[in-house]
Length: 50
Image 1 (cartoon, helix red, strand yellow):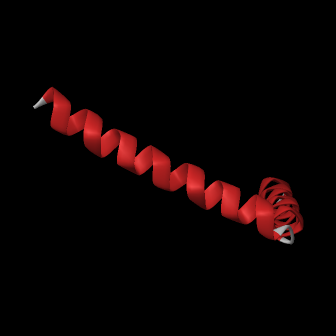
Image 2: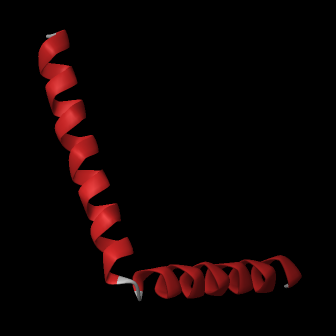
């Protein structure tokens, strides 16, 4: 019982931390932009390797 309760608490903590960070619109946009750049970079890198 205890491990599952600890897991639930840790998941709630993670959700709280993520929601707190996502309250910042600039932080959310920054994460989206970084993810987009990573996808573009990997696409280009894979194309270059092939």
